[in-house]
Length: 172
Image (cartoon, rainbow, N blue to C red; front, side, top):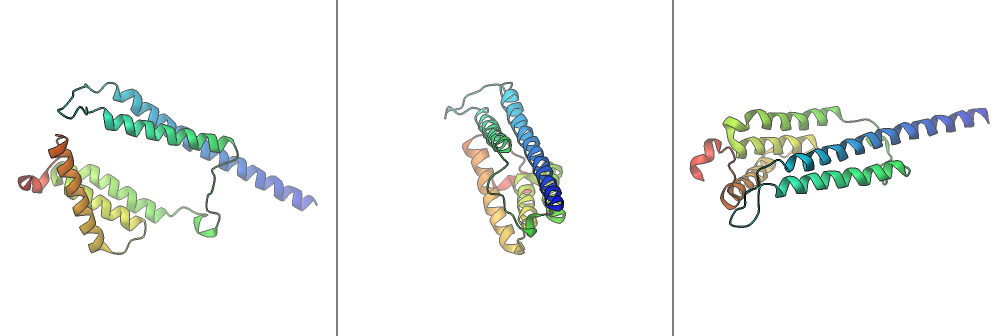
C-alpha cells in the first residue's frame, strides 16, 4: 500500500507540474496576443480603395492568439489540456526537428532583405516541412515557390504592400 500511495503522489505531483507548464504557456500566448492588440493601435490608420487598412491583419492575429491562450488557460485550470497524445513517441521533445524549424524561421529573417520574400519564405517552408518529417525536397520546394509567389503577388498587387522583391522583383 505504501508503494502505491507514493506512486500516486508522484503521479499527482507530475500532473500538477504539467498543468503549471500548460498554464504558463497559455498565459504567455495570451500575453503575446494582448501585446499585439495593444501595439496594433499605434499603427497609422490609412484606408485603401478596398476599405482595408494596415491594422486588420495584426488585429486578427492578436485576437486569434489571445483567444487560443484563453482557451488553453481555461483547460489548464480545469484539469489540463484535452486530447493530448499519450504514448512513448510524444514523451520527449524532438530537438532535431525543433532545430530545423527554428533554423528555417531564423534564416528567413536573416536573408529576406537581399534574397526577397519569395526565396526566403520558400527556404523557410522547405525547412519547416523537413522538420515535420518530409523527405520530398523537390516537391516541397515546388509547393513553396508556388505558395510564396502567390502570397507575394497578393500582398504587393492586391493589397499594395511592399515586400522585399529580391531577384524576382523584375518579374512582378
